[in-house]
Length: 304
Image: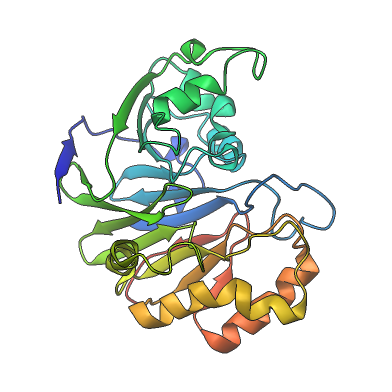
């Protein structure tokens, strides 16, 4: 397993500049900014859980890590508007639209004093994360090219299995978790704390892949928090009879890996608030320390 290190100056923020996440004063804190898979679903039926596509922020030992850039990334960017010389690390699980569509609206990317480190692996067509982000901002898809972003953008291509060291104390481990989607899972370690972010678990397509199964287990073994997905495939509403099919993969993984807490995200576009309320009750009957992600959810990672 190969490694690479990212070295950069420390950024010191005063309290007046603190975002909601920083104000929690935790050494390792997670906030959910987007919870949907496939497509954003703003409506009166999704107000409680949220309708933005996936985006998760982690504030770890003074460092800001962002996982996926769905439409939730826009609101995250708005919360950072008062920062000076912002530094952030953006990790993409894949290059599908629901993972990158918020990037053109990430306000900090347009501020010259900011520094953004962007990580991704090759897409299913072999395009790099830089190329995928660049292409979605070309005419006729978007009115302004990526070059209008004035912050310092540093793109880092990696191969699945590489380990990324951020100033030595925050360690990000990667693995391929879905062959069809070319999706990456991440594990963030700092001191004795750990969070895994795996939002493309598949029930069937990788069932016979020993290497993928091993990578998933390595990322999730004993973590304090696992952020995962339900495994849906068809674009139709779920019924009660489908509960086990769509949720058992993540629940079984959490049980088998000794996960301390499980948060299920990437909600299907057809899953309204009432449906998700019912799911919340059912998953907690199987895994007591489980809950469904909702926008604004903040989780402190500790041993309590």
